[in-house]
Amino acid sequence: MSKKILVTGGAGYIGSHTVRELQRQGYDVVVFDNLVHGHAQAVENAPLIVGDLLNPDEISAVFQQHPDIAGVIHFAAYVEVGESMSQPGKYFRNNIQGSVNLLDAMTAAGVKHLVFSSTCAVYGTPEHVPVTEQESAKPESVYGASKHLAEQVMAWYDQTRGVKFTPLRYFNASGASFDARIGDEYKPASRLIPILMEYLLGQRERFFVYGNDYPTPDGTAIRDYIHVDDLATAHIAALNYLWNGGESMAFNLGTGQGSSVLEIINMVREVTGRDFEIEFGPRRPGDAVRIWADNARAKEVLGWQPRYGLREIIETDWQWHSAHPKGYED
Ligand SMILES: NC(=O)c1ccc[n+]([C@@H]2O[C@H](COP(=O)([O-])OP(=O)(O)OC[C@H]3O[C@@H](n4cnc5c(N)ncnc54)[C@H](O)[C@@H]3O)[C@@H](O)[C@H]2O)c1
Image 1: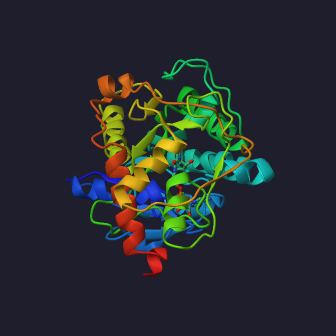
Image 2: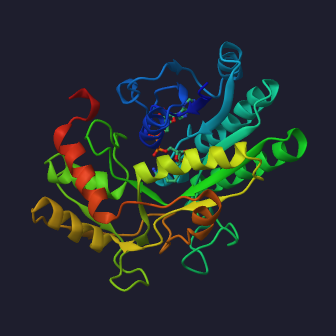
């Protein structure tokens, strides 16, 4: 019999791609999402329970209705670095209290395996790149701090209630499904590539690069862009690791390759065949200077391997945005 997985935040960007991959691999999936940023259309064939993690009764009811849940993948959170700096309470409440309510509901139901969406933002600007999981956490944003604190809360639930968990520290999730049916539909777009796509589609008048005075070769910030379908397969590998008795452990999910903002812009020009003007603005608070992943642990322990690079990321994102210029409304 196929195992049943609860996916919180499964109507969001990374969650919906993971739901698809779970179903492709034959798992039974239940999605729980309050649709504040998620989209019902992104959940194609799985049951969607509309509920809020900040309401303990709503998440407990899911485990009562589905007593056969074998594991949880927890995406539900607020995700914007910039907004987290202006509204810290919103982020600490949702990202920490929401996780606590989930952990209580899980443990009450006897579910002990949790894959958690963490982030490279827990490292801030690391001393060493590529960054390993041993690097000390020095978040530079409320968002990064909220994820780091949630990891610590989970470690206490491991110690006190035996919940085994894997924080997956994603680098920059990007790209869309190869059939252009689902993609990044977060409004207002806050990530570099979707912003560039909106600009190319004439939905933005100007495009700003935030900061060209960073201590990097071309002066712009460096990130590790990882295709969302590669993230999806890692979640399933992490669940299997836990089911096979794996100890709680964090994993970096990146390609191991850093790209600057200007390199992304050049790849967008190449893939789309369009030239466009860019402007330079000041750095944004909370943005790290440069970071890319050492992904050796995920490769060795989870047997995971990223399959796609920058070209596939930009190609799939361009196809998704061109096919759905108004997002899921189209
Ligand atoms: N996108 C990235 O580059 C990136 C990088 C690192 C980590 N992450 C993490 O990955 C996860 C998913 O990110 P995403 O980019 O898919 O964002 P997203 O906003 O598209 O997805 C988050 C989903 O969670 C839902 N949600 C939020 N709060 C909720 C609550 N209280 N109850 C129920 N549902 C709730 C939203 O409606 C949304 O569908 C997040 O935890 C984020 O912190 C994302």
